[in-house]
Image (cartoon, rainbow, N blue to C red):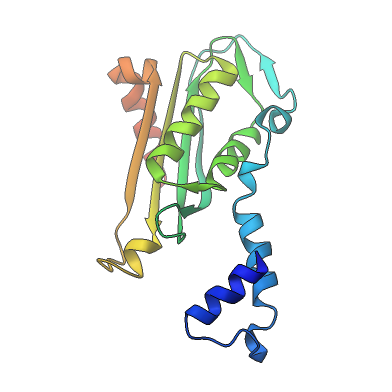
Length: 182
């Protein structure tokens, strides 16, 4: 990969032998490996058995989970917050596992719509709740730095599964709870 980065620098009109760029190929390779580490993560290992049987059927919400991802169209970052809610049927998931699921999928080349859906479908598959809701709000550098150059634009996506899709009251309760304290 380092040779590709040197070639890229040359094609951009730079001198990869310039003092400030000498170690850039190594740094870029390490950065890209870190920013796309979600491809190597195993969800079952990540969950590590942190699924617990409970007799609880009220809403569980983890909100304001910050995330960082790379747009698959321009390889530019997009970042924001993710809110996840679910209605347990027989199991709950360890609290720290929800942000880890978000990070696993965010650390891949993405579009926000797919990212939102992958998080919701994974939680649905792993704990089989009565419903899952995911809302993501992000700023995309591909819109801010190039193209339309709109600095304060936010993209909001949602995925509502199970009761959150079928029951407007559950959906509205989730949406009102994630807006509290803003």
